[in-house]
Length: 208
Image 1 (tube, rainbow, N blue to C red):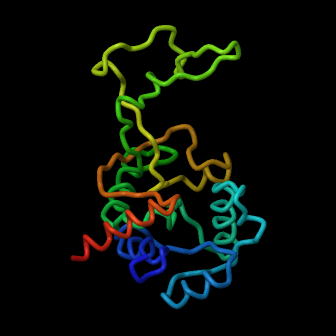
Image 2: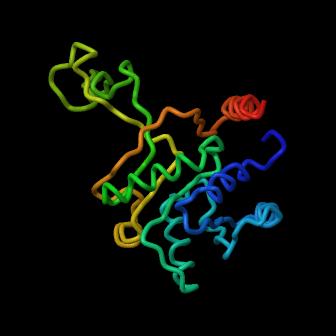
Image 3: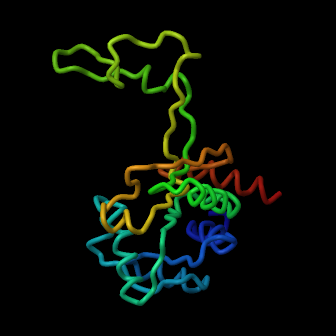
């Protein structure tokens, strides 16, 4: 992306964070590992290929990383997951999220964006078995005014922070008390070629 491997952008954000203690890479791919080592990224173990399929739950990858680090005698209170498909997330965003996570003392924190009113779950319908629709949130009567809709949020994939205890004991990235960090920074979670092209345009614009 704009002359650098996609993962490089996340690496730069992580190493420039003031609050992350250590950043490691989990991968099973020898080519990715070689490229990352050339950029002096920390790759303390190889991920099993069984944890690198399209159906592998993210929690299994994080749990494996935690267990591998602990087998090396390294223990942490919490884990911050930074996926490389979010290249526009900067170090300041990471530090603000970490600060809020510790201040709220929850099981986890996720970065979120507010859902536009027209997509609010209270205005979303699901199919019933009889061919009719029902309000997705379970109410019998729809909220008629936009101003009366409660705020709703979607996770945007930029940051996940979770207590290590929750990861190990509940096999979850969320736990029971989920804090959140809402932001409006330029952000793209790359899933399509269109996402890639938009992210590259934003990166080029920022560099000019």
